[in-house]
Length: 313
Image: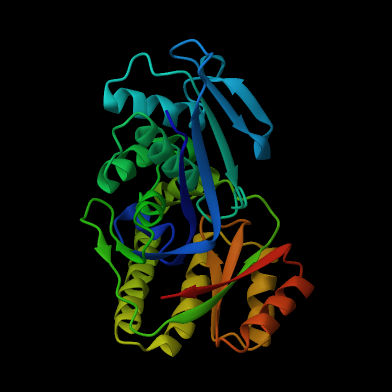
């Protein structure tokens, strides 16, 4: 039996984070410069049913049976077995590597889940279709994020720009004119579940105010979709700035993210905003291709621990 390998890209949210949890639209795109990779190989001398899991980045080296059922990696493996009706799989090794920063808004958890689901289902001779992969990854996302929107598993599974509304069919987003993004990592961990939980608490306490904020974010996402599909990429800059201001009012920005946003704008970015759960993690800046390297340097000078220049097309 051969080894099977699968990989999945990172992702970044362009518009609509947090509001998407409350039924408003959001836009997300894959970030192919970073990836999660899973390799499943047979273990001929192992006991049937034995799964050895290695994930060096998180110092994990254990048997599946030794992990808690709600460990995200264990849950992904078990979900595949349950979906395929496999109660005693062939003994195998699962090795996971990733270049996607953890807790930075780049979808590391969903990418790992998608890579595992694809590699393991192929190893078992029943490769799952994208729709099934996304559904299973969404269930694992609940362990990472509590009440996820579904956008991470969707854009990562299909590896294409998407316009997403919770509970609605996936809509691919046609990019008429490619554009460049500079992604700046604040270096501060951003556990999405905590930010989402805090926003939910505030929404319950101030429902009318937060519904108004979410409506405004949703309208920005709709306007951004039209701009992207019509090739009016420069229009995205002011929309990014407006979205960031709303996210600040929602309560999910931070001094570090605000500083990076200002640094990007001063370096010539057309627009900039935080991306993802907030309170840390990443921000993004819309950049003319020739200015992107300089904006990346300015972000690093302002405190970004890493930058990625990504092309959306």
